[in-house]
Structures are given as C-alpha cells and as structure tokens.
Length: 160
Image (tube, rainbow, N blue to C red):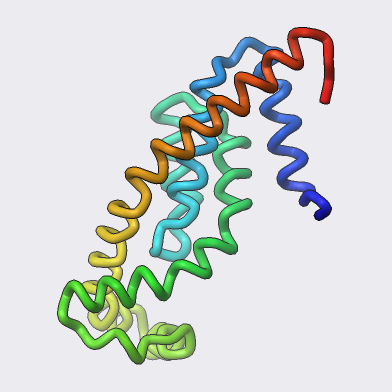
C-alpha cells in the first residue's frame, strides 16, 4: 500500500526533530494530540484548537497539524456515530440523523442548526472524550516506542 505524502512528511519531520534533540515523548504527545483533536465531532474547530494547544504547550505546529490532517477522514466517518450515540444518551431522536439532514439544518441558518443539534454535539463530545481518553494513552505509548526505535536507528547511523 503506497504511503501518502502527508505521512511521509510526518515521518521526515519526526526524524528531523529527533536529530535536533527534541524528546521522543514531546513528539509522541504532539502526534497523539493531533490525532485526538483531529477527530473531534465538531466540524471546523480542530485546526484552531490544535493551533492553540501547540502554542500553549510549545509543541511543533507542523507535526500537530499534519496529524490532524491525516485523521480527517476518520473524523468524517465518526461524526454521525458520535452524534447518534449522543442522541441515545440525551433521549433525543437521532436515529434519523444523516449528513443530508445536518446540511439541511445548516441551510436553514446556524441558529436553527445550533438549537436542533447543540445537545447532540454536546453529548457527542462527551462520548468522544470517553472514547479518546484511554485510546490516547495507548496511542501515546505505541508512538513513543516507535519513535524511540527510530531514534536508535538515526543515531546508530542506520537510516531506514
């Protein structure tokens, strides 16, 4: 399976940062946060949230946004399931929810869309947090092992 350009850029950036002395744990947390917030069930906010996180925590902006970009298709796939689960928890009827109905709400005006979908988004966000908290720990741990292995290759002179 061919690897995407964004993936290759991410790997190259990780190698560069390792050679500059950036700690593997900082790189792993940057990628993990990019993946985590890249799947948030609210369209259009991940880039802004991640930029703020990168500035606040002094993380690499390019890596965090590349990770965000790489998981964007996953955000699209998980958006409706998060909202539907939110509907189940909030006792709202979300079983008929579709991308078309969401677009219809958006066409009627953002205030109407917010009134109709606000609760579902709130509950979807809670489910997203429940889903991502344990997954982010696992993701961080796996990434840290991979990056440490890459670091050993880079500093031993073997380039993979």
